Length: 86
Length: 137
Image 1 (cartoon, rainbow over the protein chains, first blue to last red):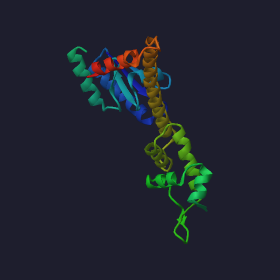
Image 2: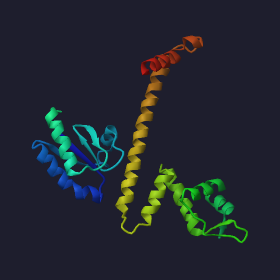
Image 3: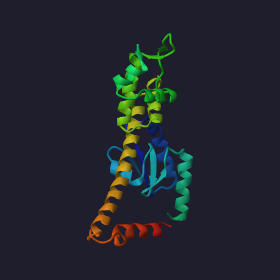
């Protein structure tokens, strides 16, 4: 399972939340691939996924969170997806 | 001090647009003349230029209001403004992508219409649009 966090450089909100979100993702699924993407470096990909606001999180190539979730929300979604096998 | 007409001429917009900006909370007259007419100072003129430039970059009036609020907020930093600029760019790129897809769709219709002399009831473009409409329902 691949989790991609799109952030804008200099975003304090993103920087403050990244570590706790990454920990929650790894707790939900030990094999999760965690990626932090600077949206300016990955603009085409971000547009392709439909990212319009920042920060945003995509899971397995699909935009799931349009704003930063709490670690609990992210953990819940990842556990549900793991149980569904998606 | 400037009257609404003078400010409008200076900024290259209509007096109605200035009144609209005022209703939207984007500008405020510095005072009123003895006759009750709005009077604007240099800050108002700078604010109108700011609004115009932001509009040229694609920001809506609601978003411009947010930028103005941000500018007056002590705790805000350049990163907050930059994030909004990046989000605006994402929105614009998204629209460009959608419009390119529309343009490609038109390219297909145009290339499929090989015979311009056919009567309109045999027009392949109209026929294709009708089929798309049927498929859409």
